[in-house]
Amino acid sequence: MTRLVLVPVFLAALFTEDGTDTTWRLVAFAVFALASITDHVDGRLARKHGLITDFGKITDPIADKALTGAALVGLSALGELPWWITIVIAVREVGVTLLRFWVIRHGVIPASRGGKLKTLTQVFAIGAFLLPLPDWMSPVPWVSMGLAVVLTVVTGVDYVIRAVRLRARGLRATGK
Image (cartoon, rainbow, N blue to C red):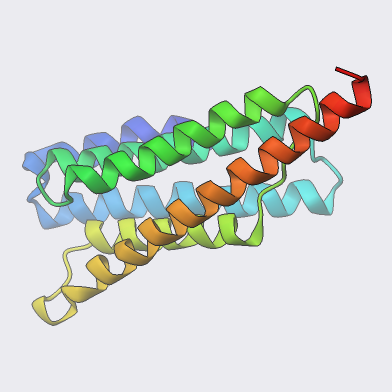
């Protein structure tokens, strides 16, 4: 829930001074980083204490998508990230969320290693875009975002395949 609360705080910091003030960009980065770290901490604590629930399996990805989506839309609105990148990532994320609901009666598809790598790469790329980096580091955000887009598409296709298989198994098991 902390991530969801931090989304408007992040956006306020990002858009202060039209996104051009170095101090506010660092604040936006810090809020984004804090929210991203809470995802890791939350998952680790849930696994350590056996608190993994179906509710958490559903709400955790939604909180991730809210934070990532807000950052991508914010960066695109500021003209720093092409809209097509935001759209590709958003379509994949919304599609996967809808697939989760489509198969929920048949089971929950856990995040794959590829999906976790995709999330880590997206977080790194967004962080690189948020930071006021020196010119010599200007390729870093673009290369990392390119990798994030590739991983986003590949893992999205993998998720569709796993969802279709899970649903087919569920339907066979119920005789439908």
